Length: 414
Image (cartoon, rainbow, N blue to C red; front, side):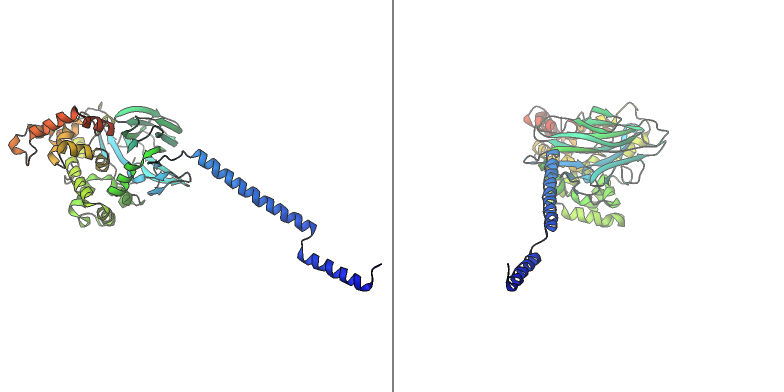
């Protein structure tokens, strides 16, 4: 039997315990919340592991890229780098392709985003003046693990043909991911060409080229050395400047004030970023291509002639008038400099004139026949036409040719 004093002490102890410890029911709730938190952390870890397994592992010296999206940068949750500014957009009629200069123009591929996924989108009006619509990228496969595919998320009243180094490798009419390959250690010019099936009706698509194990050095060249990232800011002005060789030439030679006001900020940012050496080389390459012409481009001149054979396919040859001078520099320049003994306009042009892969329409308008027929006295400096011919012949039978051919069967082979 407890005394009154013992009862009061016992009651005080029980009251103190009740204040400092939860009830049994409350304790169960705490345990439940603890287990739920642990389970949530576990599930999040599992999701992260699955995500990492789904993403292709990055090899040293390579990156995973989607050539799509609105802006330069990381494109999605899988760590793929978005590079919309690397894509060159063209529209083709007959046997000639023309540069796209406005994202809103009929049939121009342009970068978009669907959630965190980068895309390239296209919309073609019924009875369009153009026959096919191109997105072109320059790719490099540095390892046996590198691979590429065309990812088609939407397609309406059209087909997409994939050309690798001027050769048709795939035709797609449905959604899905479609692999294409080229030799390990080589580079490739890839053209994804949208063609309406029924021209009398509108057509559209969302499709992009993705690369796993892309040579990081090529990305660094385009991004850092040539500052293409400055033209990947999702503005109409950046799209216009990036896709026009003529405007790029004016920007570099005459400065931002020579351009329309809406282009001046983009021109300044790009021009200031470019190293002096890269700037000088781009000027030469752009001049050779025909970008220095005022008014219409080579492509416009050729198209206006109206006597082209419709059997010619502009995707099976390289047209410097609309092709990418930036990719020329990244993929071909060192070999061309070796062949020519440095940066030499006549020699560079002579190499292009001597390539079977260069479109004959460009050669005719570029005056290739006249260049080859010039006398030695008419060639300035030490690079005579005989020396030029000799260098081209030597390169065709040397390791340089193999290097050029590895760089690009379309652009750099001889």
